Amino acid sequence: MGIYTKKGDTGTTSLASGRRVVKHDARVETYGTVDELQAAIGLARSFCGREEMNRELFEIENKLIPIMGELSMGAAVTVSAVTAADVARLEALIDTYDGKLPPLTNFEIPGRTQCDSAMHLARTVCRRVERRLCALAEAEPVSSDLLAWINRLSDLLFTFARSL
Image 1 (cartoon, one colour):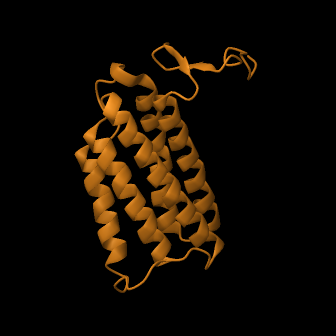
Image 2 (cartoon, helix red, strand yellow):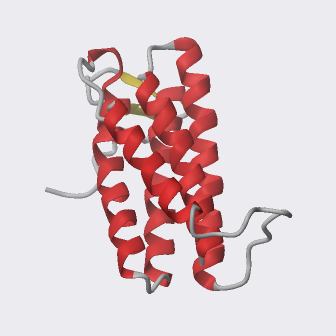
């Protein structure tokens, strides 16, 4: 099977439900930005030498795969890829890492290391995912747990960047 189908040459693509939409459809924009986030997290992970942090980042990357699937399904989704327990897990990670840091007294400026910079890049892409999710949620149902998880994920990425 070839990598190209030529079906998208006219500016449309298929959702997982089979429905064809324009490539700039809010749902496509949202899961495409999640895909970008996954790549940004992978980049950050490739620069970081902290085994425990890399393990957490890898788990997050794996979690983003079913999230993209959920977003590509649209109204056909019956169970979200993210639960309240997933949100609580990110909160616990944030609390653990943040508890080892001094209080924040000024703005963080990326660029101390490649890992720090890549982590901040991943954080900003995550914030874009959140904006896309919120816009999508105005038009279509989006899991409240997914919205909360993405919000916590950007906080975790910020905390990881600070801890570097």
